[in-house]
Amino acid sequence: MGIRAKSNLDRSRTKWTPEMDRYFIDLMLEQLNKRITFFDYVFSKTAWMNMNSSFNKRFKFEYEMDVLKNRHKVLRNLYKAVKNLLNQKGFNWDSTRQMVIAENKIWDEYIKVNPDVRPYRVKTIPYYDDLGIIYGDNSARKKGNDSSLILL
Image (cartoon, rainbow, N blue to C red; front, side):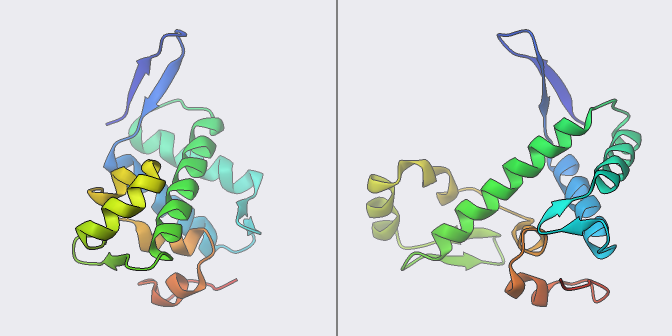
């Protein structure tokens, strides 16, 4: 489960596990389906309180809402970075391996100019399609597995 580690500033920091990410994403999708708790890709205070309560109950934590809000930002930035990468010529999504793929030459050239994308060469993103639903990608919404999903 999640671990809170002390940083140099003696503050607690959440170490997110894949299970925690998956559950948080599921909570966001659940709130998204309620429609009234989601507007312009921002969750309402009630939605945040519901997600925080469910998350803490599931993992037996006592996190403040800021922990989930910060993870929301991290996941949104991850989604944007991968989406931007996929918009570049030669990059594609491998749905079997759940990662961005391209020929080595294309990766090498792109990383020279954009070294911050290096991790995506080997990183799997098992929830990319769900992030697309959450962060407003209509094509991902159409591909969503949940037939009860309400499109905004």
